[in-house]
Image 1 (cartoon, rainbow, N blue to C red):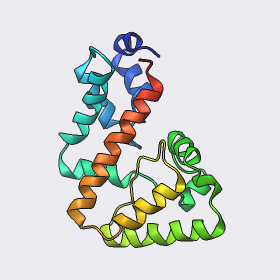
Image 2: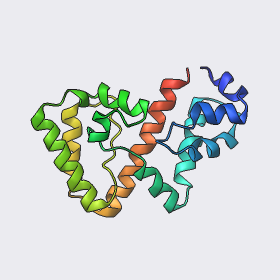
Image 3: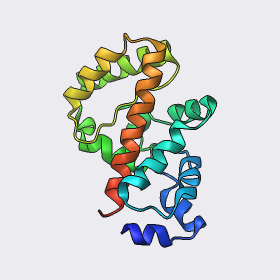
Length: 168
């Protein structure tokens, strides 16, 4: 899809096409839609990211909580968004050894227990080893650091997903 086609979509079609850019959080696309027409792809990405950054903290928290655990049981059962499946598969999280899977599961549990939300990492372009290293480094962080990092990672995820859908 081209940027011209994005700008020509009706509001309903825009929400239908981009409502899943931010994991189970159509409000991001609904907010970003108001900034159309977009002058270029960077402006479009910025509109989606601004929607997240300008949202009230409870809405941001809901967005964080909407993300699945990386290499979690829901992913194995196929209960995550299609883009999450592709992204995790692309990072090799579908080829974890039994030991790696158990390590991810233990880290997911420890992280959720400590912070109350899932570990979020924009896995596009990363390997399972890089993700595991980041996981192990971040599980000891502070609540404020991790909340900010989660939002920053979601902004990256949104950018990657938009770049994959809209031709430059």
